[in-house]
Image (cartoon, rainbow, N blue to C red; front, side, top):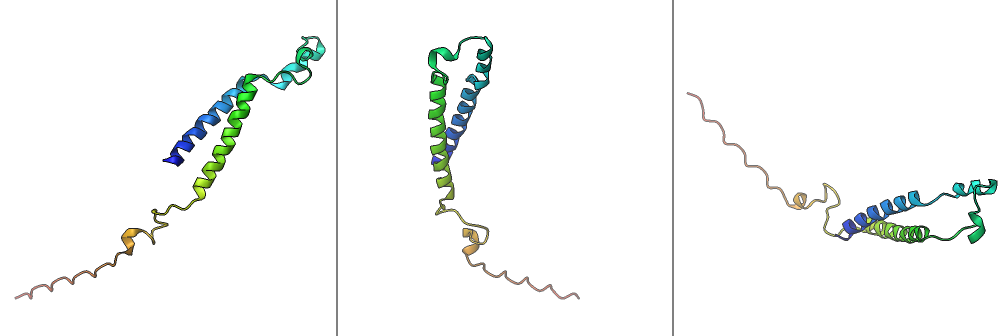
Length: 109
């Protein structure tokens, strides 16, 4: 149950990270500012303002990493009730009774 919930959370967080990264403006978009296209770096300095998108991306990245560690830890824990293979399965541990011999056919006259 916990493994399934963490896996679903992992999928949603990874999709959200992809969406947020695609929504953010790239660093190459500011390259035109040096050639007179605008003064984008003059107000907030050379690095620019930290937007809500970049903060939420950092939070989701932290959640993604912690969730990945939790999934890895849960994936390596042995399950107590599950059989390890065909040899150790519960059905094969019971002794098998030998089959009764078939009755001899009746003599032909």
